[in-house]
Length: 427
Image (cartoon, rainbow, N blue to C red; front, side):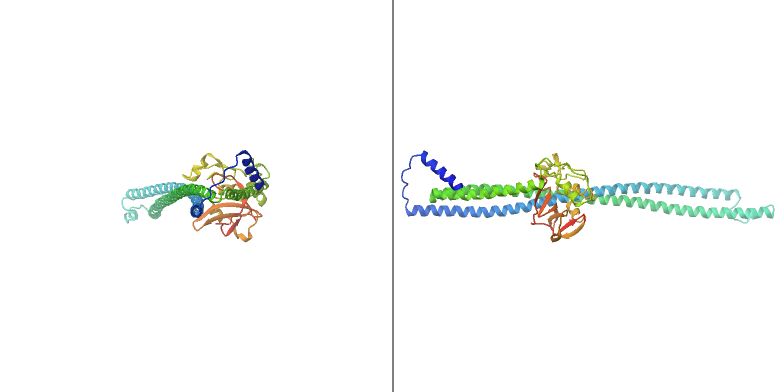
């Protein structure tokens, strides 16, 4: 059909235009010069193509780095919330310790009052309680025995008062120390979490700047390559004439046909996975603990927008600002899921998951990829940590919330950068 179209195209042009005069007969030096020019342009296109391929590979790596930094920012948010909760608990402990210290102070005052009572009793007896004069002033043996019993009791009270005073002072010192320690621990945890959050934000901003710079470089390379390609086409046309144009068109047509076939295949896979129009997800069933219930919940959100920081056990939520790529796509104004948020929603009937793919990786039993099965979580990352998670559907397919600008989708499993283990929460 493409050949017929070209024949019709050129035939139609031939019938509508006058027959051109014979072309001039170029000299050998002119032909050689034209070939040399075409070869030079082809070499330039090859060089730019190689540069562009390397740049695209670097851009993909930077995109992975941005995703990793986004997940690290998620981790910092979770850790900061945990530290704030710990600080609140520490403050409550400090308040309780201060209350107990105040109670100990009251005990000290009571012990001092007991000592003052003892001193007053000694004064009323005319001398120090327990002295000989207290016995000599007795009127009778019975009175002396009573005074002896009284002196023993008062002496015992004095010892008890002294013991209570010492115990109360010790308890107050312990409670004061506990209050100070609780406040110190709370401050340390908050400072550490805040520093981690600031570090994660700075690393994410640096990753976004690097990605933006690389994207600009890719754009320039694309423009340079396109310009040189145009020069190459002109040089080739000068050397080869109409046949060269036809060959280039057929090459382009074959490439376009392959791309059309690939798009059709992807559309068929997506349609088979959805079984319904994109953007109109079926209502989710109740959260359940079975693998199929988990998968059904994830698939019920196909077509939902990606929103960084979005998603919880109840469904999609508004995204949050990240100061970078997600903000450029307006994720903070979208209701949707990020990769770990979709897993939180899918596994709501199994267990509560943290909103960070790195923690989700260790949330269940880890099995080698060779043993992965339907319902397992798959992860991508490297030495720096985890930056993406998806749910395995079987038959080489997975459901994921991919990245800003895209939607929840079914896609073939990507093995580049995949972690060596899948995480299993069910079965």
